[in-house]
Length: 259
Image (tube, rainbow, N blue to C red):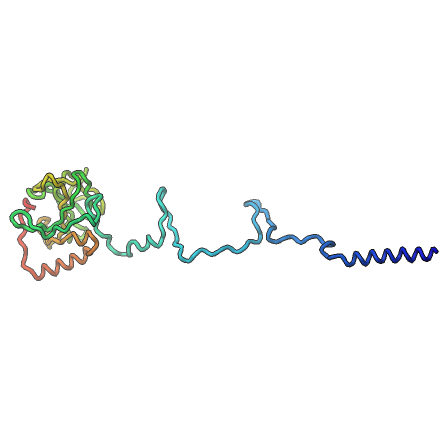
């Protein structure tokens, strides 16, 4: 009887061992850590994942953004680089503040009193509108004449091109002969001095090519209209005027008091 009891107990114990051996291995071993959720703390920064999913690459068409001055919107570096070619001369400014190219009229070939040519364009604007330098240069002459009224003669840095501003209401404060101007510097204010119609204040603006004598009242006029509207560069206009001058008879300049 005792032998039978020992046999039965041994059989039960063996059955239990076999059952345990057949259980899944995952119930016996601790779970492996997920590498995507393991975080490593560092003293200098918050915990960050040691393994991160790869992020999308930025599109190739995105322009690099150039830093902008405080308070201004950033500008794409590509647009900054393309705004002016290296070594190129900036275009002339329209010398009356607030006037755009599509507001200009080509009055260069119109006739004036006694049939004299205009040789300039009139830029219409309210009296007192600011007049600025169309380009870098030097104030060669401040002059009051019968026709032009209050005028400014500006020579470019090479003293080969002259810019003439007439019918001014007044000069900008501090303007003086010999003063070096930068493009956009104030010159004066729109008016109707000289022989201009008081009901139509405007700036009479001329561009002229100076001769070897550098006389401010004696120069070869160039039409400013195609230059200010972007249809011609100043260099192209000077080249055309030089060619025309070489193939034509010399013009008679009016006396300085009539300029």
